[in-house]
Image (cartoon, rainbow, N blue to C red; front, side, top):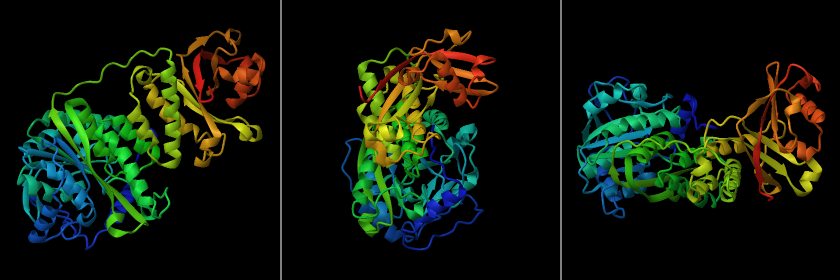
Length: 522
């Protein structure tokens, strides 16, 4: 998927350091080698180091609206308790009365970069906090360790805080329940997340709770992410964004959640483990989600230079066997309603990409991905100047897409819209231009080769020219909009491929296709 949310090792350490800057106390280090119990790494920094203070604080945070039934999964923040403890408490309060025998913990790896999941070292039998030890479900961990999806480095757990800070809440509500701690690497894409989820489906049931540890947007110069003004408008803006993003999690929408984060560049540190959870819920769960709380660190610190959003989510329902996705539908001509949805998707993608706000998440909340939107199709997204700007700078502002029908139309439109904003033939699109452009979508038929240029029908066929390892394509509407004859059309296509104007006359091959073209101006 486009613009994967990735942190290199330096970025990972930077994010952790920046999170820690909000916290009171000195971060306790963990020895690089330990025996059978993993000792606390951040007691006294992220949360109190004394038993009495920790018990008092956790119990003080555990106040939330009852869901009626204990949840099957939760998403909770992992910052210092002074900032995120209240949100975590509202999320974990619903666990009271649950009859869990195992908790699977998923969180982001802040110190190590890898793909998939990382389990603790085989000799680890428990994780400790000041409140005591939580035993590992060693049988489950041993079975998972045999799968390649869980071959990440065990050392990732040594200094990691994201799972540890959830443990006192589990100890206060569930006691010494067995845990399966799993860190998810930042290189985990949706395919890897689905693979992990399929393995975890073997371990879920009425006695299993999934806890995903994640903070949401990290905003400010120290985080390398500062798209919004750092004034009093920032906290409500971050809360609105957090609600839009969390709504895709609540809706159990892996695609919408992932696309919103990747297109916007949002700094949700636990995006990868949340992705694993959503794939598991989408394929092995029946139930509903609920946002328990959304807040920011600014409510405590008053500091606008660096602000973190905290979100709590719970899911109530029942686990079941893994369900494969249905076969992709066969593409047909898009209906008027589907055309409208496709254009709205392109606009929402472009807006979210340029403003970093939640329009794309909101699009997924208002539209079902079905029918032609779910069918594999090639597509181009064209950005056109309009009005006075078109007269001054020309109509075309960007046009990029994919010829091959290798992915659902919804995914192809998202990728094409983002790419068109960075068409190398033009300066990168700016958010201030959004009101000055109109969008056009061209959904392509499969390509077919033709014996020569005389088989090309201008205005009907788009053309892919290939020669000497170079390729270029014109959409069908190019001939109509320019008024070119066939020779001029093919000469310009040759130039676009980096060839001489008459290169098309010998040694070139041609493939043609048709397109269903529709735009915002219609």
